[in-house]
Each structure stands twice: as C-alpha cells, then as structure tokens.
Length: 139
Image (cartoon, rainbow, N blue to C red; front, side):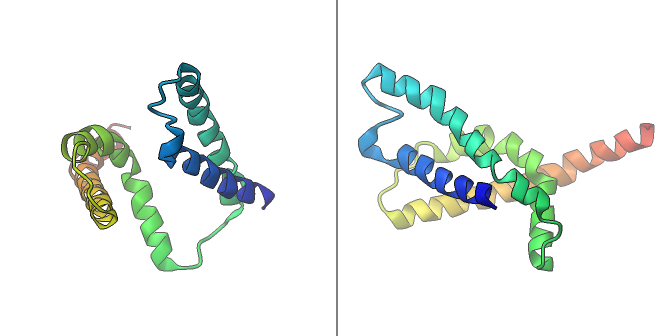
C-alpha cells in the first residue's frame, strides 16, 4: 500500500510539472531544461506509474459488476486504442483545434475519447476478432 501512495503523489507532481506553462519544460529555450524534460520525465513517469502494479496484482476481484464489465471492455479494445488514438484520431482531427475556454477543452477531450473508444471497438470487432478466430482455426 505505501507504493500506491508514492505512485499517486509522484504522478500528481509529474503531471503538475509537465502541465505548468511557466516552467516551459517542452519548449524551453534553455537546452539543458529541454534535455532534462525529454530524457528524464519520460523515464520517471513510467517508473512512478509502475509502482501501482503491486497493488493492482494484489487486487483479486472488483466488487462492482459494472466496473468489471467496463474494465473488461477496455482491456479487450486496448490494443486497438493503442493503434488508432494518436496517429489516426489525435493528429488529423484534434491537434490543431483552437481551445478558447476550459469548457471547450473538456468537450474536445470528451469527444476525443468517445471517438477513440468507438473507433477502437469497431477495429476490434471487425478486424481483430476475425483475425483471432482465423488464428484459432489454424492452431
């Protein structure tokens, strides 16, 4: 349980550092700040998040059947989400959208994840499942 607290607090600190515009970690004119953000933030972030894994492995079952269904659904389509979320959805449709207000940002974010989930389900249902069935036939 102490690792879950390290994970949660560490994630909050890292996301704060990454989101803080005044720090300019990603677009800093200072080369060593840019190097540090590129080299260390993307290394430390997965390390911090991996500290949640022992807690997740110790969790045997989820109490809510609704949470179980949602978790199972996302688990099944997660590879499809990985394939389409950035290059097929974010870059062509959302990358250059102007964000004028926090409400607009929330609406874009909700629309983005809605499209990612629906697109991933379609890819899973009509491509991945038939290919997996073919694989199972041949083995």
